[in-house]
Image 1 (cartoon, rainbow, N blue to C red):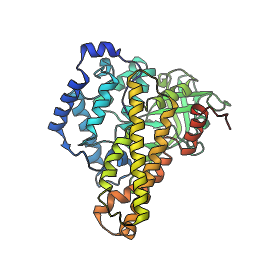
Image 2 (cartoon, rainbow, N blue to C red):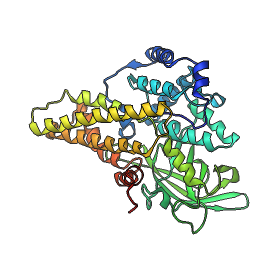
Image 3 (cartoon, rainbow, N blue to C red):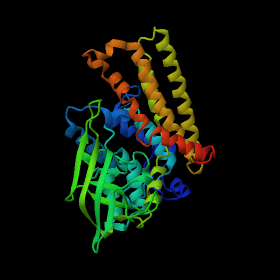
Image 4 (cartoon, rainbow, N blue to C red):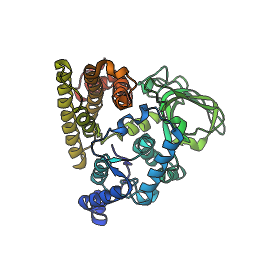
Length: 396
């Protein structure tokens, strides 16, 4: 994935003014060698950070903030973001080279994932001049944001949200509840989708807002997961007052803003990142035939996903717009995690119940598996989108 806002400098201008991709990669490698530990085959924490139970959450948060600040100070934050908000204004190829390299190093990830990859680009695309100032603070590691979309009664069906935003003389009053909000407890601001037109249905009558989570009437309650982590939260809004300038984009155009946000999930790297986990799993005991066969299936699926993503990257770098077929990568990732969890269960069996810290990572893979079929849209929602937008099937 990349942190690319839609408005950016032309690639031809970038290549004329900035380093080539090869030169940039050399600079990035030198920076990472100086500031981080090279660990190309370690456990891919970027994929599982939100599920892990942490002894000191505050220390982890501060390490993530400091790393983001270090990236900003050395010119490796917001690689494709415009210079006017502190970015480098380089091409998607540069961003992909950076992401590929950073995966090889042990650095604190996870806290800024959604903020950088989806929310920041959305704020830059639709925000006012004042709202865009948040982008610079995000790049400096000063602000973490959360995405307030899912609801208890709507799930992955964003068009069914019921959280209301009622217009007043001075602005808006928001009431409702959001759930499964990543990193809400660490966030100062949220990007909210609410129903601003009473009686409207589905994607009509929605508006996007910028919300200060320290405002009166906002309550954040962390949700403890069965993995031990608590990175998700439910967020309640009880007569929360928002100023008129809190609207992000145009009133009633929230669906368009939300769809633009989802479109920023372009450079999925799960296939390559998952390869590190598969290589680590190869050292387990695969003597049992059923476990071995299951693991071989996972290896084949991982290589297929990596090849599929490589093809998507090539098309994007050639200038093709991202299409709904990228949702296939999301489905494949869920199958991979669940498949590996099943293979590990067959291999280790009752050992997984032992009080052995060396098995913590494999327990995490097994327990986190179901979440990959829900996060970012349930498999059912994604399959419907593929059926309608990729295969051209009629709506059910």
